[in-house]
Length: 75
Image (cartoon, rainbow, N blue to C red; front, side):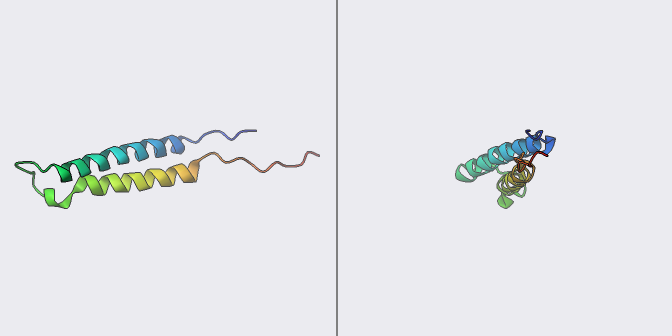
């Protein structure tokens, strides 16, 4: 019998995808600097937050992925 998929697995997928998108946008900003950058631009927040979201999303995916149960002998 298949185990139901946890809502946390879907949350992990969303965090992973959003993290990749934010990380990619941070790399784009790094490669194409703005003429008038905002305050604290030198901290590269999108890169850090994108990486953090990607790691957390990957952890959720691994932790809450539905696993097959070991087949139990019928009595």
